[in-house]
Image 1: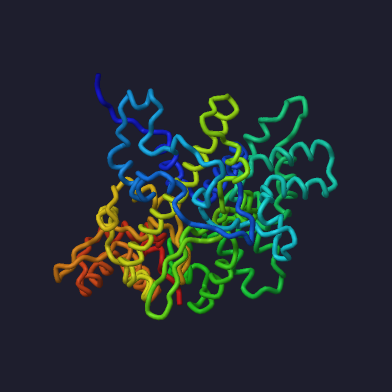
Image 2: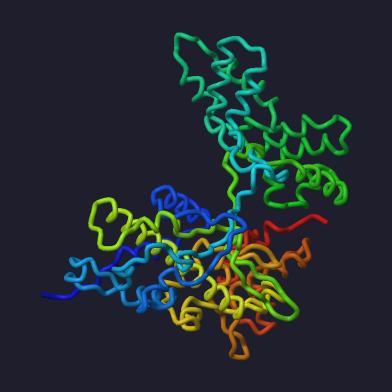
Length: 490
């Protein structure tokens, strides 16, 4: 005889639903509706009761308390109890003939608009983007070519990467053909020149200089400074990359203002032409929580357009008979129990989400009022202690959950950040430091950009003690280039 910790099926379901994103939860609900006849969507216009679906059990606790205690205690259940089929919370042995409104829980309305909605665009939700290869093959089919040239063209298109550049050398491509075809290197290069005339401009280039040159050649001949720009990308692309403007002015015999206009023309080109063709399917973020300001208070509410409203079907629940051990009645009885637990898990998920989101808003009012620079340090333990839950529960709640605020849509994880000590003995959030660095770089003199050491000095002047290495790490996370690469010719 002994005792062991066991994860009950109800607890496993609650944990699974808790960590699902909104889109995954919608799919999970749809599967539950298809597999369980006791579950149904709440129709529009019908009354709805948000009371506990297990209220007929006198010993049941509030949903959020039951879930959290289950998380912390791992739902301790003895083997004997498992064999007897007894769970920590179960429906009573004597079921009512008809269901009660307690079997209903509103999770909110469906996010899909009706068929007669004028704003509904089916293609924006279902169509996948076109790949670069298919876009080039479509243009190839419109071009008159011999069979041999078409074979070469298809091979060349297969060797173009997503950025629009040719991955293989012409020699390697030529050697890949059957020797019986007797394809020469000049033929491959001639077909490549045909492909380089396709859209988008610059496609099929073998290096950055050739890519920019192809785009310049497609511009109108009377474009100002086009000849100088062609010479720049053909002969001095390396000096442009290292921003050695003095050498460029000396070699191209241009004044500073003239060189600036040439560089502006080059910078208007696209160094990655293949990226214009989006092949991935569009991804949508559905916020779980909506935060808005009413007078001087920040209000938190669940997104009522996230998931459908569910309830236990009263007609099917009325078919469950007392003291009937037949196979059909046992099946319906089990389905009713699963439906109630599913609705209860949804309710518990939303209650936990509301608790956590409310505490996050309470801690980060400064961010909502003033932006990233007012973000406070926050870790999972702070929220877990405030709501009386375990850190693992907070981690599940904040993963792939989004909050809609007047400043935009953010993942709940965004509001958590480490801290850095200040000169006055306080703490400053790493998110706030990143925002300050971004602001400093945006306001810097582009002829003499700020180095990491200089930025660290400016932060120290504001009372924030940050090492140069830390500044470099934050700068890289923001996608900001080093000072040597940020230099501009004004």
